[in-house]
Length: 315
Length: 103
Image (cartoon, rainbow over all chains, first blue to last red):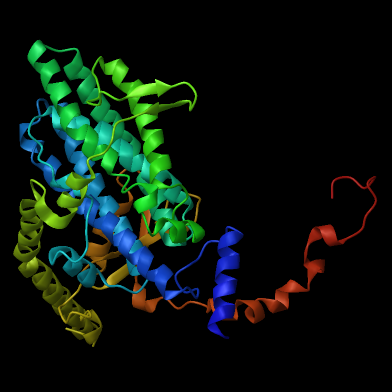
């Protein structure tokens, strides 16, 4: 069948909301876009464990420690759901990891910021996971079946992450003067990077139109960002804290919050590798991978040996 | 070490396993995704950690992905054709009076 016909069948399926499955014909660009987006998301989950792992041993109570460990375990799980979905498109796990370790593949820039105090665990849960959820819920209806199914699983689990974060901040907000200051400081530091998580403005986001036509993306970056700002501007009142934006104000006419200009220079700078922790995060990842090499090798050899023993016993 | 464990980059990769989970007694096992493991035992243990952290399962099946054979979606039209013109296999095909009860 000529490619034009295959492309038409493909786009017709997408328009009719019929999911694309691994063995179906798909344009190369669709496959590439998906592998890039899904692996980038998987890498973000894996690297995202690092800033939080930093606080597991210093969690203020056993309850906080247990939940933080569970959250970090979920993130490992989310990374694995997404790697597994990406592999259905024909790119192997080793290759995906290599792209991360060599810096060829990106992960969310938010994880290149440091976690300086315990309150950061709260701010990450509330704001970073909140922004992630805002991005991820529409992906549960993405046109690629394995991706959509992985996202359903992830979204179910993310809700606990956000709630535990808000609870941390709520507790601090009712605490001592020092704790309240720590709470506000964490919000101040994490707010703008979280707002940037939605990516460049729509007019500077060249792939958006194509991704929307393919129904990989359902809402534009600016739409989701606005929704996030509107929700957080209300939620912050419950904490009795403020968002660090003097221009934040309810716009009666638009029925949305107006907010200040985003510092895109900072955004691009962190993406290019000049954020506070880019080097540290990647080094930690590569180190863990390299130091685990002998375990992966030994497990394979052991499995092979056991297989041979079973074969001999049968013979 | 068998050749299928060699990935594109030439290093040894653990084989891929497809994971099926029974969410509760009385229901079928359902495909949930895949993972890498050195052997079946490890695949089951990893599947527990990856796919049942919140009591999503009471039983796990693992099958090495290379043993899964699948129909070809490109042939779907002709492959399922034998069933498409047999509406008489469905109960609604039969024209019966409304007075007829319990059928």
